[in-house]
Length: 278
Picture 1 (cartoon, rainbow, N blue to C red):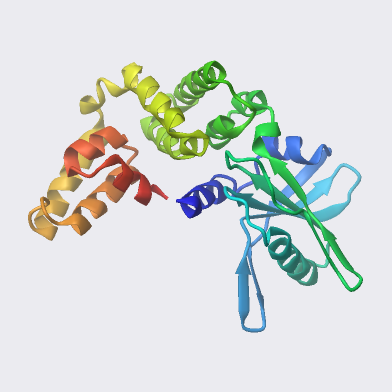
Picture 2 (picture 1 turned 180 degrees about the vertical axis):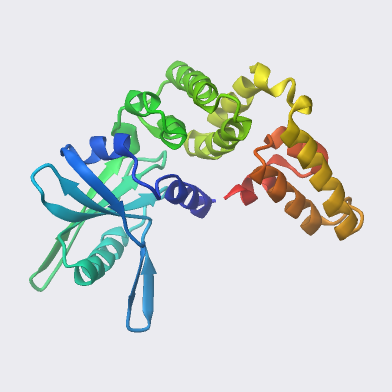
């Protein structure tokens, strides 16, 4: 499941997110350019999570390489050093390596590597050290959802943040219901990083929201049902054909339908649906 968290976070932050960069760099940034995360050297290829070319107010350009980590990896510094050297060779710019730890356990990874005159250091930041209000004030749905991982939250604070996330997602999504539904799916996955109770709180708060009551009147709902019927015909009987159900669920997710609705249509479990979202 750790790979699913890492994959989701890579996708959320593939494009520059200024609220996050503000908290990480404390630098006056005037330009950010996303770079290809893959670097190939001879027959070996490596892919990073988030790679950006930063230009600050003084005109200095450098590469920011962020790795999202949901577990403690004893070889993290070695992984970072290897990739950062390749980035330096490829782009010819200074490289700042940074690990963003999103796990719930205390961070225990070593942030440096040294041998025979070689010295490497990368900063490691626990997202619980970040201010959730910065992300909640953003108008970017990806950053809003990310606030579930920021700050050291008591049970009461976490519930308040979940409510604020859902309220803000409603405000910025307007009539684009699929944006709201996509945010809910992302929130359900990321909330697991803060424990099962956190996800249950998300599900409970979503169930209270009026946006889920009249979904049968929504065009995407009707499209999802029609997709289910068409896929069912192509795959044979939907019941008993897991592959067909997963394809139907995937199409419905792309249309922004809720996980609860997809469960009703496909009879898949919540865990099966979450496993294919990203």
